[in-house]
Length: 504
Image (cartoon, rainbow, N blue to C red):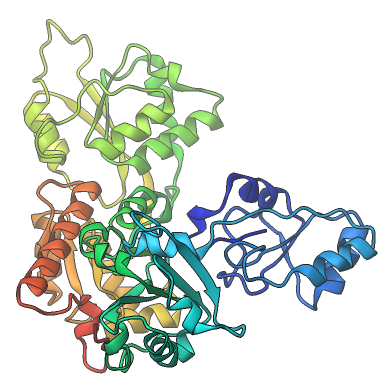
C-alpha cells in the first residue's frame, strides 16, 4: 500500500478502508513513526521481516505493508510479491500519491504545466546525467540529496545552463517541509547550511520559477508553528483543527480535569425540578455544563424532550453547539460579548404577568463567579446555582513537554481562561519569553500578566475560534514584516538562543 509522501490526509480512500480493517501493519520505510490514524485501535505493528508477514497472512490475518509514496515507483516490492505468490497468499497492490507530484504541488511548483516533458529519475541508480540535461521540461530527482552538488555540475557539463532554476524540498507535504530555491550554478553555496536529509526531492527546470506565485502551503500564516493548547481534550478538538488549517502543529496539554461533583444530591434535585416544572429558564455557561446535564439525563433515562416548555440560554457559540448536539436549540444567545455579562445584558427582566415561574437553573462549575447570579437577581429572577461538575488541576505533562514550555520549544500558547493560565504555570512552569502568549479576553490577559507573562495577542471576541484567528493574523503580519525587510520569516521558537538557523 502506498502511504503517500507524508501528509496522512493524502492516503487514498482504498488505503483508509483497508487500514481500518487491518489486523497488522508493517511500517517499513513509509514516512510514519506510528500506525496511521485510520488504523483500528489495537492494530499490531509487525517487525521481523517479510517472512512474519506471510505467516500472519497464512493464518487468515489482513496485513498491510506500507510503502513510501507509490509502491510501484522506485520501490523494491518485487521480492515481497514473489514471496506472497510462492506461499499462495492473496495480495493487492494499492497505489499511493507519489512525492514527485505531491511535494512539488505543496511547494508551489507545477509539475507539468506549460512544459513538453516531465521526467522522474532515481539518483540511487546509475544515471546518464548528460542525457537528462537535455530534458525540455521538469526534471525531478529522487534519492539525490547527498550528491546534489555533483548532480548539478554533471547537468551543467551535459549542457544545461548554470542559470537553470533548481528547488530542493525536504519533509514534503508535512509541516516540516522546507524548500530552498537556487540555480545549478549556485547550488553548492545555497545548500551549504541548509541541512537537508532524505526524504528530499531535487527539482530542475523553469517551473521552479512559478513558486513565488503558486506557493500556498509553506506560506500559511502559522506554517510549522508548534502551538500549545492547554485545555481539556474534548474542548480543544475544534480549536486544534482550526490551527492545523493555518499550518500549525497543535499540541494538546490538558491542564484541567473535569470531574463529577463530590455530592451528587444537588444535581439530582435540580434534574427532578427541571422535569416537574420548577424552572422557567435553564442557563448553560459552558459545554461541560451541557455534558454534565446530559449525562444525568441518561442516568435517569431522559432525553432532550425533558426541556419541553423550558427556555434555554447559552453563554456562547461552543455551548450552543453542545446543546444542539443534544437536541436542544437555545432560546437566548448573546449577540455581542459571549460571557456572563453579555448574557445578563440581553436577559429579559422577570415579568409576573408573562412568566408564570420566576426561577432559573444554573448548572455550573464549582469555581464559577457570581456575576450571572447577581445580574439575574437584579432582573427579578431567583437562581438555583447548582454545582454540575468540578474542575481540578490535571497531572503534569511529560518531561519533554515541560522542557519545551520552559525552554522555548513552543512558538505560541493559547490561553482560553484564567484557570488555564494558573493551571499550566502550576503543572509545567512559565512559558519561555520567546513564546507568543495569546489570550481569549481581558480577564485572562490580566491573569497572565499577574504571572509575569507578556500578552502578545488578544481575541477580538471571547471565543476559541476568534483566538485562533487572531494568532493566525499575528503570524501573517510577522511573516510580511520579515519579507518586507528582506529577511527570512522565522518562527518564534527559532529566535531563542541556540535555536537551529536555516539559510535560504
